[in-house]
Amino acid sequence: MKKYLTFLRSAMIASMALTSAQALAHGDVTPQAVDTSALPQLGDEWLATNPYTGNELAIKIGDSAYNQNCARCHGLEVISGGITPDLRKLNDENEFFSQEEADDWFMMRIRNGAVVDGRVYMPPFEGILSQEAMWAIKSYIETRGTPE
Image 1 (cartoon, rainbow, N blue to C red):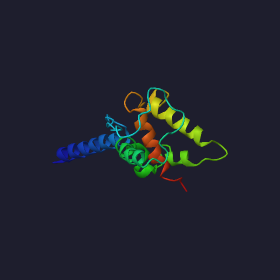
Image 2 (spheres, rainbow, N blue to C red; image 1 turned 135 degrees about the vertical axis):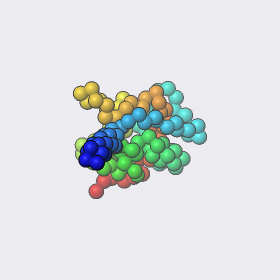
Image 3 (cartoon, rainbow, N blue to C red; image 1 turned 180 degrees about the vertical axis):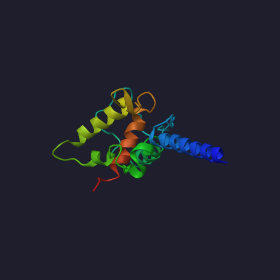
Image 4 (tube, rainbow, N blue to C red; image 1 turned 90 degrees about the horizontal axis):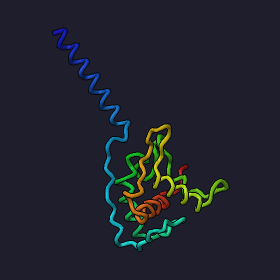
């Protein structure tokens, strides 16, 4: 009986360790497709500023796209839990950056991802999401206000 309890305890500890490691890792998450066919198409040239700001259809598409592709790391309704950047800070035009600079940073990061010391903190989405999908996501983020 003692051997059985020792085995059971070891199995539970191993199971908990594996489960917690999976909860903290990005894992193999497949990006979800975003249908942007109803939006004005932007062409091959990458734009420097968001052409969809305030566009209700883009916001609706961006809401869905964000929740399918971004929320698992950046938080539901763009409210970060503190581990990843709070993207609502991009909505706070201030003395440190303009809205154009926020748009530029957003597109640089979503297109290229974030790798630090060889570790992928955010995968690159260029070639996975279209420019239209990226700007639709930014349009949704713009509606979420700024953190308090």
